[in-house]
Image (tube, rainbow, N blue to C red):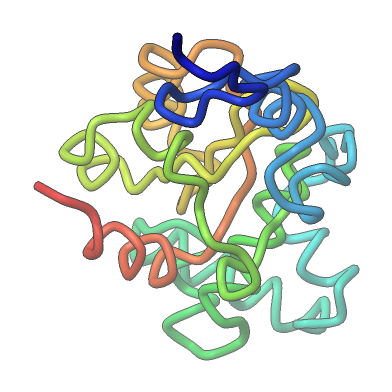
Length: 181
């Protein structure tokens, strides 16, 4: 007769709540930066007004930059960067604010592997988008250009109900280089 065993260690045991921790992580957010994303309203002011409000240029500099943009047939943001009135990151932050998107510094956040798998790497590279994690049960996707409607639409086609945040183009590209082809 075989002795009675109280605990059979030969088979993996099923624990109460298996998968619950993973589901809670998705609901509450994978990182505190994502869990506390503010709900921002889009701003109606033009970019020039936001740049002046932020104290990055004077009203006179803005008038000059607008004239240069019209004369060179380029966008205001490109002129402001070329003439070193603002950095690329400043511009992305202001455009994100204009669109009602939070800005996230990717140096403070490691993307969640479960979220990264939601978007094919080739699409992410092409449109400079990067799924970061989850906030309130929704996927959070970083975009390098908050005004790129095509990139937003393409990301939405793969990641339904995505919440978008803006991030530095160089940081997104650095993270995308580490992804498999």
